[in-house]
Image 1 (cartoon, rainbow, N blue to C red):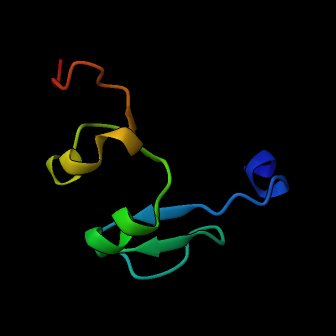
Image 2 (tube, rainbow, N blue to C red):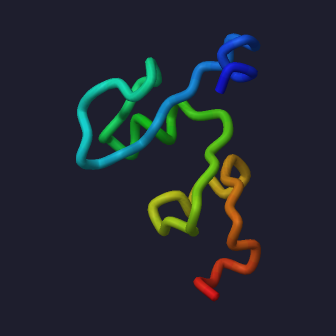
Length: 67
């Protein structure tokens, strides 16, 4: 986190259930707004709402399956 903060990279977190800051990072609970302001999205699992912006998405599930 210190490396990210040192580079002045803006981190935005999408979480549908939270409306607050986490460790000084902005939390957004609106997926269209999140997609609009994000340059790169890292996710744990493929999320169907992000299918139209796959060029921005990086996930550990390379094949799009949950194996």
